[in-house]
Image (cartoon, rainbow, N blue to C red):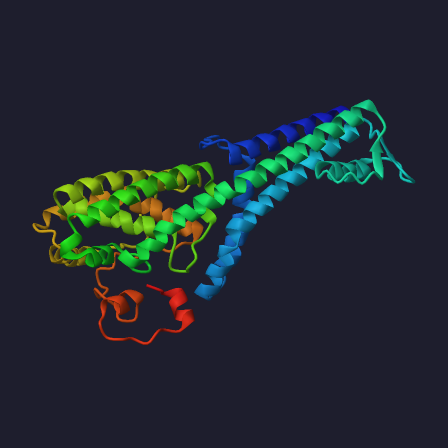
Length: 379
């Protein structure tokens, strides 16, 4: 029995350390189907999202879901730590519980308590090892606990740096594409003057952003659960607006802007497809058509108004073909992460007077909106 528990303790110790190494330190996506961290997140998110779907108020639901990302990371670290000290307690018990404790007969409860004080380097001294193997296990555990906590704490700034880098572009997108962002609003706000040169440069920045997000979020998938500052912002919505814009330009436009749209579309579609595969989301058609066929003439009219000449019905088939390459993945991520997809925005007026964009572009003074309204629709 002692030998079996000792083997289980060694297996648990190795499995947790290896899982922590792959999840935090290893700079690449691990494709193995079974991972402890992945199973932990699936179980915890299933419970968390189940409760979230039953919250009626959108603001309260988003506020509730926003806690999951950082809190789940702390919970994962706590789970790893608890599993490690349990593994060392199993090793101490398998070695015969060679501990000395005043007035208490050594057993597994004593091993577990001693393992906790050793792992967190408390050194209380009320329980001490009295055999050579117990001392060796204690020294190994103290070094493991110190190194584990030091490495995890050292990598936390890297994780939050990746999250902050992601959010900067999402916040900047609001001024150009509205809130929530849409492809139509992005085209309107660039206008005829900037649609050929300025938009191409802007899409090049999003090509870089998509590549960076793919690298960081494939390495640290739990960053996908981190939500943006505002309820109508999300990295899923940002991807949707950019991919929609690129699809329109590829289908109908010409020249430098179309060429850059093809590059941005390729890396952005690659990113959403890989992220959907991480969570094992099926490739399924959308439950509803985000851009019905009767809206396509409006899309072509908008493009012509924004300085994209020559838009004909010939581009409709290409647009539908491109949409099938990314919309099912975005739909899966949207449902799984509970981050709504924005519309195409073809039916929204060019400038809404109750937004910050409308107040900036209007010469008439407008009284500021209440703070709570700005929070939910600040652009």
